[in-house]
Image (cartoon, rainbow, N blue to C red; front, side, top):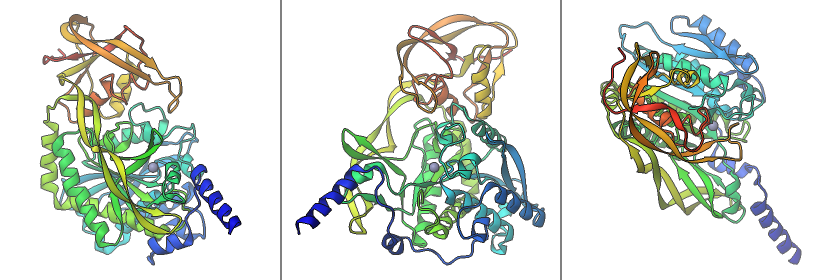
Length: 515
Ligand SMILES: [Zn+2]
């Protein structure tokens, strides 16, 4: 008795202290995530273990493009840091309908989320070969990047070869892969975009909950932006149409789902962070370009090939749901996107999330059963603005800021230049508070600043860059240029500054012309 008590307390300690809770038991897999008996004809299933590698993917795409040249082709959009070709698949059938909806999908931005890549390959194969899906390509045009982070994928590692997280690189654009992806995305001009990922059922924080730790329960988690610079009509339409349709499809097919959340340690207590408003990640970054945007998390990291077909099918149903929603709501989709483009909302610089206790389902590892924990949830889909500025009519950027201008162009922003020198009344930023973070985050010592703006008359030379905020993707420019936002060019030290310095770009409140 005594020894078993000791044993139990040892187990308890182990589960509370260890960063790596016990792996998923057979019982949990069998009870909650039974494998599906479906045929998946992607390269991974031609072998007993492992996932489709880069070479197999290229061969697979080549065969499909040769068999179905009338609807499927692919091109190379760039190379990974280790020199491997990044393919982008185009699915577009010749049909009477010329004004097709443009949909972008990608997988494998994190290299250790294999069902995201395999889902994209399965989707491509189905759209090429399944006669029941033939008519879909009459209405839509799809661009798919199945393996966005090839070097990471080849090692089943989250990061790119130089250690950067490509889904924290969407505003600073430090990795070559991010630049190739963003350029291809901007050129394609997507109206709907979905980024497929997998999430880790076991998080370090989860060891602190339940008797022997807990695990994430949901087959899929759905992320759509709560960023207040994304026009309200677009946020509402995304959730009420695309996300709501996806929820219905998942429910009908017996997959569990929830709005996306991660966990965080708040003074020793585990809280959940639901949704996202962060422009450094794809869901919000893309939404800020006035696109219907979502990030999908399938339950899968560290699960190997356990329930692999189930995970792929879950992702596939979600992809098809987005395609179907776009087709069924084409007219409204177009009018919502136009309305969003006309939005002249105030520039939100800082905002805070609502915090509410909410019941959330988890798997209790000790009892292999579902439990419901009531837990504080910080919700990015319920944000409140705490610091705003008037939306400028344009930003003027000094001629020497070529790196910043290149990045803005890669992100799809149109930038013009003054034809001749001009005297203009503009707002000048002066840094009034400055902190450089001592620890590196994603390769940079970030700068946290507070600035004041003052109206001044300045003579700008010919060639000064002008970014108008009446363009479709302007909300992303606001998020990147207002220096206090957490993902700005100043925050990420792309623009270095110091206390009491002025910044090399300006806000024009009055309308200006370049000639
Ligand atoms: Zn991911």
